[in-house]
Amino acid sequence: MEILKYGLLLALAIALVVAAVSDLRERKIANWLNIAIAAGAPLFWFASGMAFWPDMVIQLGLAFVVFWAFAALFALGLLGGGDVKLLGALALWLTPLAFLDLLLVMAFVGGAIAVAFIVRRVVFKPKTQGTLPYGVAITAGALWVLGWTHLPSANLTNALG
View 1: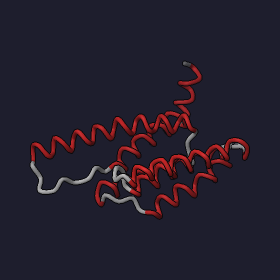
View 2: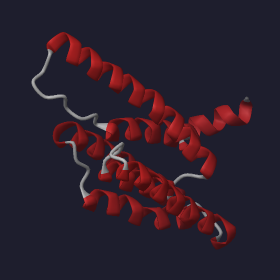
View 3: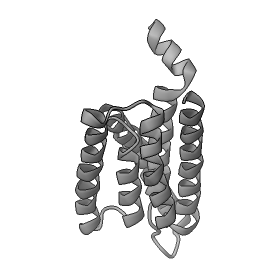
């Protein structure tokens, strides 16, 4: 089952990179990509040996709360719809504490992107403001957390330290 687990994590990492590149180029994350990420989570649960109760139920509950919390930000015009769906799909893959780590890294990377956009606006004075490709920050946070929690060397470091 370990090979399946790591294969799914690799597929998730590839999907996240595709989402980030898509968001950079088009400022859009495709629905099919978010659906694929969400659909892979139950396979990951089984490959990881998760129990239905309470583990899988917690993952579903987290995804529900995350989706609706970020949907409220979408309704306020603060986040894109693809970003909301991506965060909801990722909540299916990560424990609640790991998801909080994702949000922390996402906030730092998103802040750096925002500063870069401000500098761009001041220095280059573009005709359009542009929108922040927040999928890049989400991807950075997710890849950081996945590497930290699932790579064998990370687990060895955690065991030793």
